[in-house]
Amino acid sequence: MQFIIKVTSECNLSCTYCSEGLRQLEYLNIEIYKRFVDGIPKLLRHVGHKNVDIIWHGGEPLVIGKQWITEAIEYTNEVLSDFEISYSIQTNATLIDEEWIQIFKEFDFSIGISLDGYKELHDQYRIAKNGQGTYETIITNIKSLKSQGIPASLLMVLNSTVIDLDKLWNTLEDLNLNLKIQPVVPIGNAENQLVETNNIYNNYSTVLKYIFKKLLTSHMDITVQPISNLLTTILTNNSIGECSYNGTCTRNIITLYPNGDVGFCGRMSNENKSYIYGNILNHDIISLYDSEVSEKIRNRQIYLQENDCKECAFWEFCHGGCTVDALSSNGDINSKYHYCEGYKELLYYFMTEGLTELKKALVNRKMRYRLLIEEKDKLIKELHDER
Image (cartoon, rainbow, N blue to C red; front, side, top):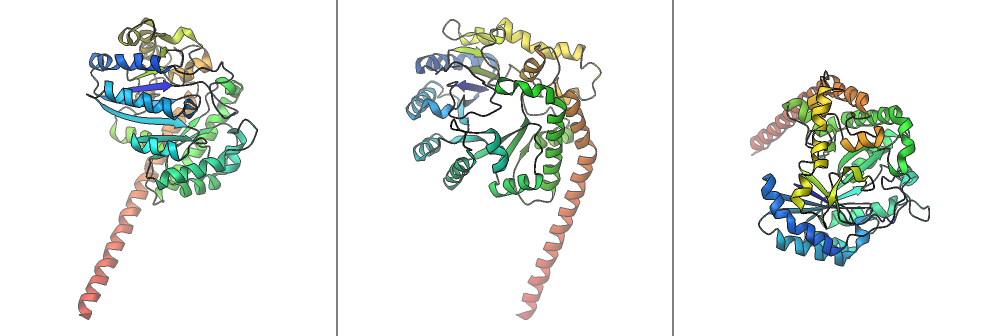
C-alpha cells in the first residue's frame, strides 16, 4: 500500500504549471507524522496488505530538511518492523547534495526527478525564484546520483508547446533513465491550460508515438510510461498498472497533508475539504480510510460504468480515468477523464498500428541475433580449423 507524505507546501522553484499554485506555506509536524505512522499497522491488517511504500512529496520535499526526514524514517522503521518498507521521493533535484545522497543510500531510496526533456524546454517552465533555469543543476545532480548507484527515474510534464522530438530523444538517450510522461493537469498555476485540452493531448500523443518507434530500434533498456503499461495491458488483458486507470482509486493509496489532513491522492489539494477524509488529529486512520468521503470516491467507478462510460469499449483500459483530473477539470468526480477522446485514440493506435510495429521489431531483432550467432559460430569454426 502506498502512503504519500506531503511534508510541505513550500517549493524552492516557481514552475509555471505548478499544481500547488499560490498556497499558504505549511510544514508537517514530526509528531503529526508519527501519529499517522502509529496507525499504519492496524490499517494494513484491516485491508490485507503487507508491503508499505512511503513516498515523500511536496511542494519540494527536500525543503523539510535532512534531520526531519532521518527522524521520520527511523521512527517508521521501528513501528513498521514487521512489514516490508520501501522509500521513494518525488523531487525537483535542485537541492540534492552529498549529505542527501548518503541518506538516500542509507535508506535505499528510489528517486523520482521532475525534468521536462531538453534544456530549452525545461528552462521555459521549471524556473528558480530568480527566474533562472534549473536544467544544468538537475543534470549535475542526476550524474551524482548515478555515480553512487542510486536508482532514479524522470517525470516529464507536457503541455501544448511544440516539441523538438529529435532533441528530446537525444536527451533521453544521454540520460538513459526510466521515464514517465504525463499531460499537464489544469490545476494550481496551470488552471488556464484547460482551454488547451485538445492541443495538449494531441501533443502528448505525438510525443509518445515518436518515442515508442524510437524505442523499437534502440538498445536502451529503459521503461517509458504509460507506453509500457499500455502494451502490457493490451498483450495480457490485465488491468493497467497505474492507479489513474485501473479503478483502484482510494483503495491502495492514502495521503497525509502537512496540517494532518488525510485524503486519497497526493495530486489532490487539501484546500477542497469536500474530498478530504478528515484529520489524523481527530480520527484514527481506519475510520478515515473507511469514511463516507472515501466511499463516495470509490463509488465513482459504479456511477461511470452505468452512465458516461456505459458503452465504452475501452473501459478496462481506463475505468473513467483519474479522479483528480476529472474533479479539477470538470468540478465533479463523477465525470470522466477530460482527456478521454485523446486517450481512446492513443489506445487504438497501440492496439493496431503500434502492435504491428512491435511485432515487426521483435522479428527484426530475432533475425539480427540469429545473424550474430551465425557469425560467431563461423568465427569459432575458423579458429578451430586454424589450430
